[in-house]
Image (tube, rainbow, N blue to C red; front, side, top):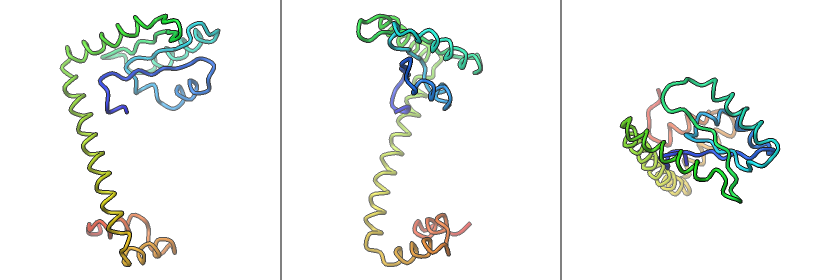
Length: 159
């Protein structure tokens, strides 16, 4: 999904283990905007401080990821979130990177679709290929590694 949107908004909920995992997993490099939902939760302020602390470790050039508090149920902070999305789009346009981002996203989508089609065609071709079954037997018996088998079925010469 990262390659399908102009602006990535990460929504974290205080008190869930997911927010801690996001902080640990390097997920903080992905979003353009971070919203901490359930702003009335007692731990929301702590989560905002933790997120800002992690973001402070990143290079401070270009777009600075805003961290906003929202409450989806009563609408608190939703206007600020919408404004941040608009501001991000304006920043992309001003920097001339909106078209670059969209091109990258569409390139990724084309490759993904082509890969899925090629995989399907390959699986159909190999479904009744006795030679492939023998090759797979060699991999299962550990006489051949998977990379060599892949090269053999793809038609690439050994490197």
